[in-house]
Length: 217
Image (cartoon, rainbow, N blue to C red; front, side, top):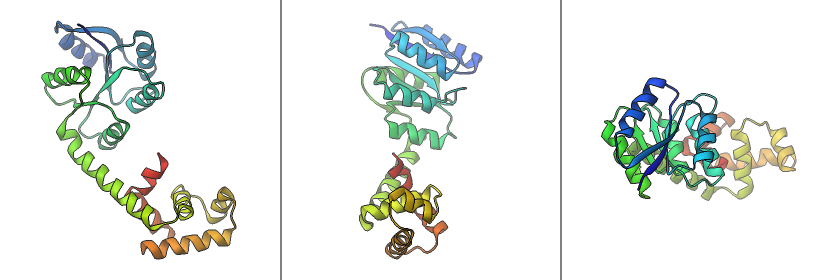
């Protein structure tokens, strides 16, 4: 049984190298090769491959944008993300989105092959060097976000979230249909509960704890 693949990378030499590696495998069939995010989405919709090997940084639509579009359309294709070790934020978001396979570009060709087969079989294959610190950071942020949410009322969480977007008190009041003095009172209560003084300090504290990242999802 063939593993039907779409491969996507914006560097022709890299794309050709991946194609040469995979074409020699008896159980793999490459059904499309893509150089942009837009081409990749079109190819996946058209070919319905089992697995997509996707470069993390693509022109027009980057890897994350392609992943979000595929997941949003509930396409059955499973994704293997081919990423740089320096792409910490990108890898963190890919893990959060539920990408089943992540391989660093500096790993051996055998790692990519192993990942493709594991992912095709319904398993997860996340390169430990790429994900261990990312997963630890995600866990820390989730715990921090829950800690803040446990201290604040739902309305105070809304006010803090809007503060983190850069809105002033008047704009927050308008967004929540409350008075400006009420916003000031909420901010005072938030500062007291979190033991953090000042708007900028509150924003930095919330983002450092992962509260704003969590609430935006």
